[in-house]
Length: 163
Image 1 (cartoon, one colour):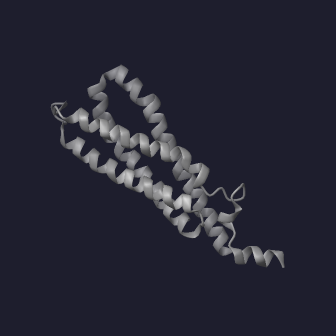
Image 2: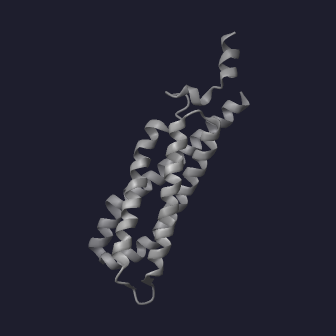
Image 3: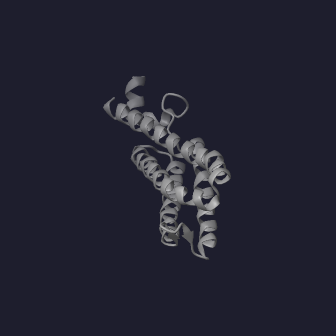
């Protein structure tokens, strides 16, 4: 019973963390970036995005950490595999983000000539992480009490209820 309650609490926090990360990334990419680009220009918007992405990466760390905690107790191989894929995508994003930041002059608000080639890589990595995040709820989110009761009940717990 105690194990089930802990897993349910972790699962709930994991779902919330996924929602914050995926929803935040989607809203930012679909609405904020285009509106800001139109309003203040692509270069200025890029300097804002450079700061915001640290928050997006941080929310992804929380989501993935919660996913690791839940998957340690769960039985879904898909969940574990998708968490690992996203972990490596996030690590790649952080590295490329660090490289992009080094190519930005924050005082003069300028970028180097090679910036956009690296930025294209960053956008592809972000798209990959977003897509894996899109399919993650189908295979990885432990929806306890709804459809995935195998996440929430250990075999010993199920056997003790049936006797």
